[in-house]
Amino acid sequence: MTSNIERTDFALSAEELDFFRERGYIGPVTVYSPDEMDEIWKTAQRQTLDRSRAAYAEEGAIAGTTNIANYDRHLDVDALARHICNRRIIDRVASILGPDLLCWRSEFFPKYPGDEGTDWHQSDTFANASGKPQLLWPGESEDDFGAGTLTVWTAFTDSTLRNGCLQIIPGTQHQMNYDETKRMDYRAEQINQETKNGIQRGFFGYDYRQLQFDPNWKPNEDDAVSLVMERGQCVIFWSTLMHASLPNVSSGKDYRMGFASRYVPTKVRIYPNTDRIYEYGGSISLDKWGAVLVNGRDEYGHNKIVTETLLGTPFTA
Image (tube, rainbow, N blue to C red; front, side, top):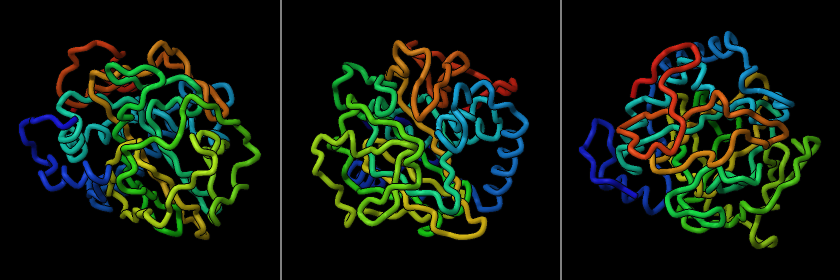
């Protein structure tokens, strides 16, 4: 999946690409200094409050019961629009996926004191909650195992062992352990109530174990890597890599805020034959959604493309 493209300022080296191919991730990578990240996060919070969530948080998609309210804020928050196009991110992603790139989704992942960790999981077509594939690579059917998406998870605040840092199991991107054609039962009342292998974990009201091919299988947590990151750093990984997070067992106001931006080549079909997403206890219309061309050209025309934020600011890759 790697393209022989012209080397850019922040492209991965041959050694880094070998590491990524074997282990499925690269990082932590510094994108901003802590002071720069503080300013970006302060601006993003202000712009988020200034913009109504009405276009994205609909029909029960209320923060605190579902993560769908945190989707795609790069489409209406200028600070996040600039972030998804940052060359320190895009050059590295292009090293892996090739030069023609779309950002098709972004998500906030907050974790406040007392919040559970996130279940071990993998995502390929992202049909895991709604039952309908959201990504199809060329030649894929709804039953195929594909490449998923490349996720760039950026620490907007310091991410520590106590406040719920991200975890990954290197090298697990080559085999799916979950059947995304199965269904999970959504139960909001089970949030913060489940303990798995001695750790409080859940999945926004779902239990990801319901998707396992083998109901008796357990991930080998002895191989897990905990990604402690300073604010302004990111990790880049395949969505098909086994990943999870720890619970926030800190006290006071030590919350963890992660922001995931997701990238695919322009040849991938996004939300095929879909005009509305139903998941995580809510639903969201795709009327105002569009993918962002963050690098190269789109010669396929598979997907709806947006060129500016809802505030009218152009995306600049």
